[in-house]
Length: 273
Image 1 (tube, rainbow, N blue to C red):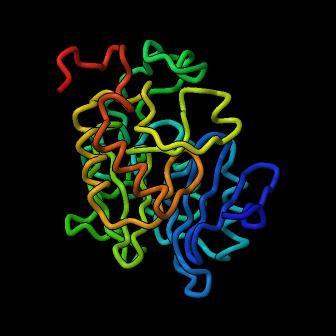
Image 2 (cartoon, rainbow, N blue to C red):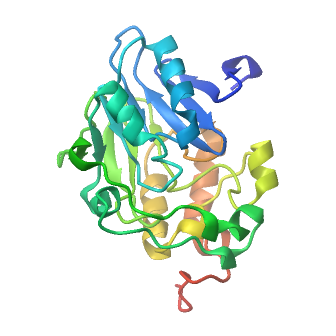
């Protein structure tokens, strides 16, 4: 992506990845617009941080001029659902997620607390301060279809990629090898405030401080690395494409223990394989 592809609004940064795909960064986390402006129908994947609701609405209006068919959640961590209730109400749009994520989206169960012991930088050190309480989407929430289709997004399929959270999903379009992976893997060292500020591009596993199941996370990366891929939009960091993406993801898959799993932390198993 060249500099001219990046539009800075003062509140969100937008990168047009493909002719029907936009990566919209809200401070430190991405949301994704999926759909062709010519066709008009689109979906929003994740909703970023709460204070960016109006900016997301404005940019969506500029591109599409209409409400999305649906809001799709890769998972329910605070930085991915920050304004999901407000946006769902404003657009009267249903919200879809994996059923394994429902307890955290219906007020039943809180996520595990962030783990500062993983190290790696300031953002990991303050992890206990990040919200981990369940939200309640009430009657807005719908289960993702069992056949793998993505409501409102023809040609896309969802797949379970747990580890970072129990019901984490990624989206894949086989036609052009495009992935929207949430936090199954990311393209910035999310534990480091400096790396996040600079948006330094480097492929990493899921954010260490909020990942409680490393074996599942490893299997999810292996699943994604086995796909024919050309482009990936991640929950944190800038989009990646081409051989850099493929070789980096293959390396992460093959050396996940060394590259992704922290040396210490409350969710790290002592007997990792």
